[in-house]
Image 1 (tube, rainbow, N blue to C red):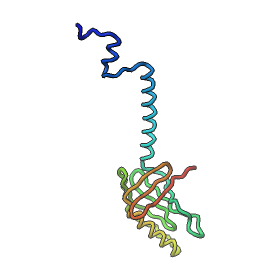
Image 2 (image 1 turned 135 degrees about the vertical axis):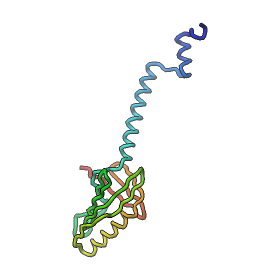
Image 3 (image 1 turned 30 degrees about the horizontal axis):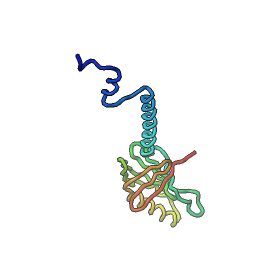
Image 4 (image 1 turned 60 degrees about the vertical axis):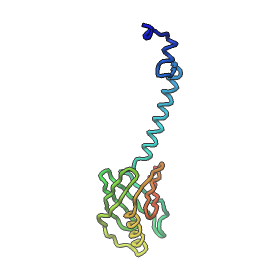
Length: 153
């Protein structure tokens, strides 16, 4: 019976070696809620932005307002509006890795400077191996670093 009998004071000492009072429990619950919100925000930041426009963070070429824009849907279909032409491709996203494989091009008639820029962009996309997201910025890494931004409107 001695082992079962104990005072409230003894019970506070015996519960896992931790003494918790009502005030401490409320503080712990508040801290846990804050940590959960932060963890959720970090998780959301680390998700790939499927179904959203990714706008290449560069200035338009002289005489144009157009910059490359890419969208990857949930099934891995990539649509890329290049400097002049358009490309369809397949994207495989897994964790922090990404690969982009061209499938078809529209074949627009482009001036030589834009045609060369399109070829360079396609080559850079084919060499992409990783990605990172920070806020509204998505960076694709590989032979070159391609910085995209999400629309903020």
